[in-house]
Length: 545
Image (cartoon, rainbow, N blue to C red):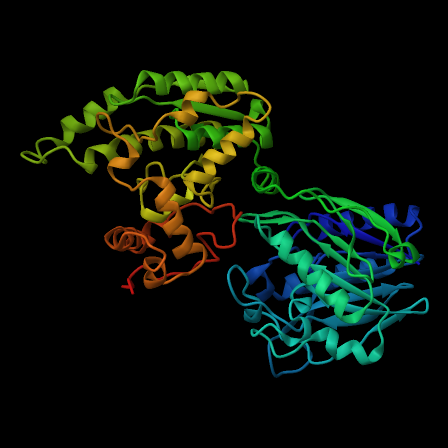
């Protein structure tokens, strides 16, 4: 028996394109002698389809895709994820299902039982959980079909759920576990995924073939990293991260337990490659090609520009340098040097005259009031006007360069430096941005050394530094991580030894700036808790413990 894993990159709603990918993968697997090929969760329609599932025609197209795949399932069986209709009036209208196709027919359908409804997941909004569990027999072997979250309740130890699908199938003596997944990336998730897969195999004593989707769907990035676990509970093979891959395995060799090593998991290597995939798929899946970036000479815009070039090619990236009266010459020089290092086109468009014109317009109305954040924000908004003008005129997509620390505390100008079609670094804390820059420079200087070592500054007033308004990022990011990523209470954070007045100030900034984040572009998710669909907070509220 030979089993193939098809780690492919579907596009939501592209039934024809997804079918073509699956058929092409099946041909490769068939040429390798595979008896079964396994595709990811909801492959026919792409994951997550969200409210497209409310369209009857969307479900009809998924059903048609299953019919077409079944007709191609001669000489090779297929395990395919797709939505299916619930024939009962009671409950939700749909199931999240795994289809077993062979000999031109649907041989078996197993529905997903454990429906995640937390963080970025909202599956109970759409799907009815399975209540029946049966293995499918093919060529003398019994296969337990599971879908993503179904393996995340090993022995009923997960308090979110009351059912363990594999325990339900245990009495039927399955020979092999199959799991089809669409498991989003975060830089720490792969370790947990392997741990859970191993725990299932150790509990049931049979091998597991786990296939995960690869590719990005707006903010969600899927890393692949599909797994084969041998019966001894060890990783037999782990497929590449962030790459499509079809690989075939001889079951008898998997049973022997002599496998290959896992993929490396260096944090900043993973983040770097995840952001590249997120950028590349956002543009390609929307039929876009060119990006524009405002280069300030600072670390955030520098890292964003590098990632854009590596994802899209230097010929598809334009940088605008827009010095104001408060921009230092070294910042302009750093930005120019970066553009030349990357081989991208750039334009220097000073905004001093426009800024002066705005001041002249507003001064009679602001008479007697001192220079403050109003005049600072004017500069950021003028830059946004220029960037968006280039975007409209020449068809560029503006990349937002704000980091997670700034987004958290509102250290950004609404309709200014918060503009953009996609936020590249919005889930990367400032201290992580510096580490990412060092990773980018590991084989030679790409980002100018001065950009990395100089004190961060928005340069919107004379001699301004971020530390004038914010605590040092080394401290700020620790507090933010505990509050945002780990959902620790103010009291919990205070108990860690942080200054009480600082904690109250930081958390207040986070809470009162929720309205800004609701108006921000989608953020590429690389952590376990990103701003956006995975963190739903009220705009109006009061919580400081």
